[in-house]
Structure formats: C-alpha cells, structure tokens
Image (cartoon, rainbow, N blue to C red; front, side, top):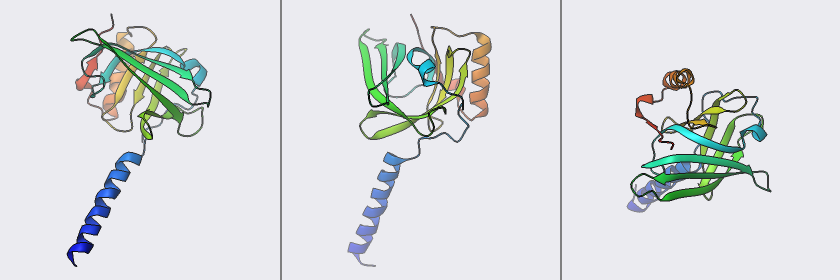
Length: 177
C-alpha cells in the first residue's frame, strides 16, 4: 500500500473515532423509570452527591433548576459556589427526551450539539429525591429537593449504584450550606 492510501485510511479511522465520541450513545444500559412525570420533576434540586468531574470540581451549594422551554425542551441551569473564593459558577443547557416522555431517559447539552446521557434510575415519593446515572460509569448524581437525605435512602441508592458498577467510594458529598 502506498503512503497516500495509508495516510487516507489512518485519517478516516481517526475521523471515525472522533465522530463516534461526539455522537456516541447517551442511553444507559440499565432500565430507567417508566412512569416519569416531567411536570413533577421541574424546579429546583440540591445535589447531595456526585462522581466529580471537571465542571463541578471544587464546588459547594450545587443546585440544578429545570424548566420548560417554549420549544418543549427542558432548560437546565446548574449552579454552584467555588469553595476557594466563594464565587458563583453557573452553566445553562437544555435537555430532551431520548424516547417517550414518560421514560426517565434524557440527553442534556451544555455545549451546542454535544449531548450526554441523563438517566433517572430512581425517583422517590412525590419527586423529593432522585438517583441519576450518566451514559457511563463516570457520571452519577444523588439529588434532593432538600439539602439532606435520610441515611436509609442514602444506603439504598449507594447499594443500587454499587451493584450497577459505580465506584461509590469516589462520590463527593456536596457541601450544602
């Protein structure tokens, strides 16, 4: 094979890898809740715990607020306060359903056409708390309408996540003042 063909094949393989990583699947392989009611989910949620990633590193008082956009998508406002200097950090994005609107499988974007999975695995009571997984084992959140959850609920969510393969010992327990 000549050098031009080798370079072309290498370039095509690299481009294919980049495209796959941009448009990769965003759905969890685990079953999400099937009786999801968006209207009940909208509003403010406190982050109780997370698997840390670059945007949230070093943040306390992390919250998410969900509301409806005119086009039917969901407006997502994530905010937190930097521990080191007490400055507010905020990011605005949008979410869309991956399938039926009664299923807790969504995709969320904060960067244009790039989406990540947002899969609601458990939701409690009258939508007072939720366990959310990303599209892979790197993303997980425990959310609540209040700044704390009971030890029993914490144990239940941790056991489910551990069984699903999540490194629950690496969770960051969010400071909520």
